[in-house]
Length: 242
Image 1 (cartoon, rainbow, N blue to C red):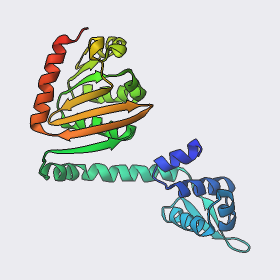
Image 2 (cartoon, rainbow, N blue to C red; image 1 turned 30 degrees about the vertical axis):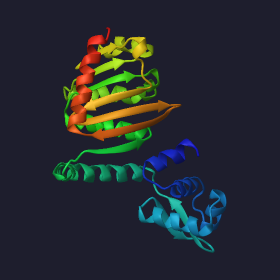
Image 3 (cartoon, rainbow, N blue to C red; image 1 turned 45 degrees about the vertical axis):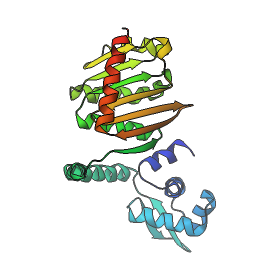
Image 4 (cartoon, helix red, strand yellow; image 1 turned 90 degrees about the horizontal axis):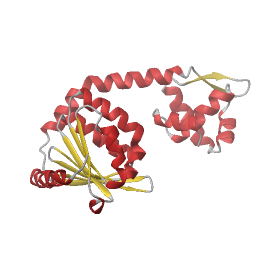
């Protein structure tokens, strides 16, 4: 899969729709039979994908010499469509947040797989407006480098404090993080290095495992457990070095 198809999928198209749209964009006007052949999908699947793209306003249909042919409309329609979706979501976001708050919060545990899920959780921490403390930060966590740049900007804008306790092997990073606003960083002695990072924000504890660029996060919602972890963090903070 090339970068164009991946970008189309990220924009909301299915894998088949992205493949078909790219072919129609390049080859159109084009019939369903040729679309199916070039995309290496069944004719029925190609036809269904074209119909969905037509309903979304991304392709047009006309009568060719022997059968119907399809042609891509301006790709700018993709951006316009995303803008409309974003606007609609922004309008109902207060209601969505209210529904989430009214749901009774009980003690629970869940598992989040992948980098995007971890990013979403970090953004939730920002939305909560509460201080986050994190310890046992390994060198592998740098794979989220670009995301963290934007994350820290959002956090600073809301004046949310963050305290880091890095592993010994990642100690050089405190030179950068201590220059960030609303941030305090230290590193732990080498004998306290941990293979996971533990974040505490409000009543949420997130234990993140970094393995070969794969990220797995265990999330616990519990007031008493969060209090215990915060107490342990305070002890570790006294052992940290700048």
